[in-house]
Figure 1 (tube, rainbow, N blue to C red):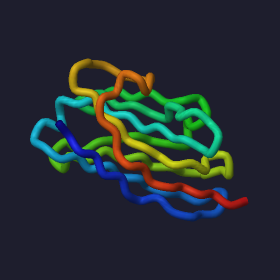
Figure 2: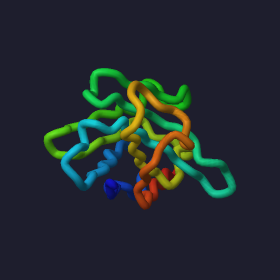
Figure 3: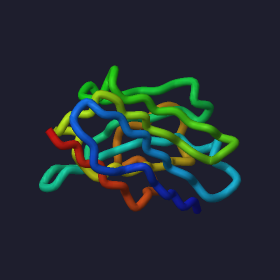
Length: 125
């Protein structure tokens, strides 16, 4: 069992940057594939980024590629999402997710076992 706590959300203007953090409980953080998802009102939760257990591999949704960067610090049990050049369409609740029983990169929400409570990101135009 792992608990995930996101932080770093807020209200920013278009073009600004934010860094989200997600800290996990437990001692086996390095064994989890991690992902970031987001959900806007009335829209299904969508994949944003994923990172492998070691952090060596990452994968992004086309909508954020080149603007967002996912990274992790296994010593701090934390995964980050650096968001640059934010746009109003990035407005959503952002969730981190963890999966322990698979390897590689995971883009499907249904394959993650653990989820944080979410953090709101609002980008004004």
